[in-house]
Length: 97
Image: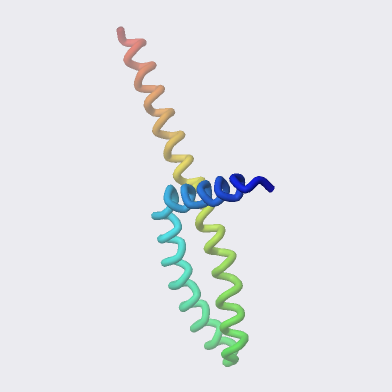
């Protein structure tokens, strides 16, 4: 591995984290709430603290990852819709001329 390639990878990781900071912060906030609720529900159902903690960490971890990608797909859909509406507006303006 080239010495600079490691630095480039780290720079890309930092840029990605900076670019998606808001979504990542929302994801972490959602994760903490989800783990807390899941632990309480799992403990109420099982009466076993270790089972409750295991269940409450596993399922929300998967959900947090899914949430991040859901946000990215949602944002992409909004951008596409906005671009489509902009294209329609320019077409309508041209047709009226």
